[in-house]
Length: 219
Image (cartoon, rainbow, N blue to C red; front, side):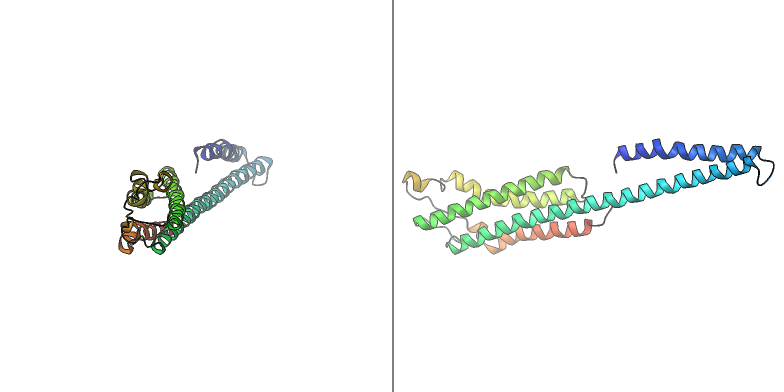
């Protein structure tokens, strides 16, 4: 909860409570009969104090509930974003397997190159989404284990970059057809290989999902 909320509670409710208690004490001392005017005013002061306390407790309780709901909504949104990016990455892997790129190749047809380029473009978009999610996780206060989530996202990012995207740029895979050069060896086998993909992508998503599920409902 924000400092502004607590400042409002202090400014609005504390003075009212103090006034109510003060009236109750002051007029109780002046009272000489159980039902005289001073006694009635004293009881009214007690009522004001109790009402103020009840209102403050209610306001704090509602704020806590709302605060928890907002945090849980943020956690769910982060999880949805991670799952969507993961599904895109997994879809790209399947497309590359279908193209026969589970091993290094030194020749590829125009049709397969176009399909590969489309898959790499999709992978690049997914990587940028993961990068944006990681920056958001690094700044959020909704996750007690944000460092663990951030490390998992960094592993996925590094894997995608090193095994595909950096090679795509460095080896000229993206433009060799346009420039009519000899086809460089294309090797994304470590990205496509199931055991590497499971360790660097699938397992990391499982970890993130586990963390976010534990975080739901936590204050």
